[in-house]
Length: 264
Image (cartoon, rainbow, N blue to C red):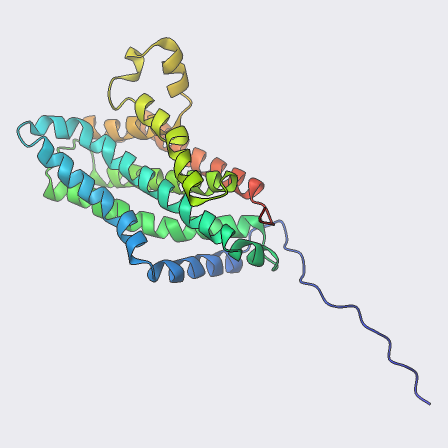
């Protein structure tokens, strides 16, 4: 007589480790890029809109090209930040409301892997976006830049990555796409007003200047202006890009920390 079989416990997916996994991160990025490939309107918004806005701005000031030279470099960094923020926040929220994020996080996939994968996917598009916008402004629209156009591209890319990080972060606090768009006046517009685009920051009220000193877009504009005025890479430029890049990494870490495993 044979002994009855011992029942086995159901297997559960292994818990994700705390360390980032390159394979899991790249797999997540590849999945996001495959989805975006079937959404040409989103791709057009991310890649073409900054170029269209720069083109319009150049010919708005057709009678005064110096005005375009003065603000074109700053907007070259601001436009990618805004578009990447808008698209990333909505795309990530759509994944959560559809239940995709909850299913993914039920797998052996850490929050850091997920956020890093999204950042890698949108960062790839940010490289294309920034390269097209910089090339258009410098070589087609004749933006007069004293420094290297490659430094302009570097700042534009960091700004786009910052917009991606901010979009991933605020999507955790929205429950609908409409709410994600509503974060734009709260997160982007104050930075736009205080970044030094409309008036030098040291000419603002001291309280507003103090606020502008802690906003990352201020350093993005400062970095663009450094390239606009100086032939060589200055210490101020290095400080500006380190602050923008550091803010992007900090916001990505906050996004991973606030990402919920369950959809409310």
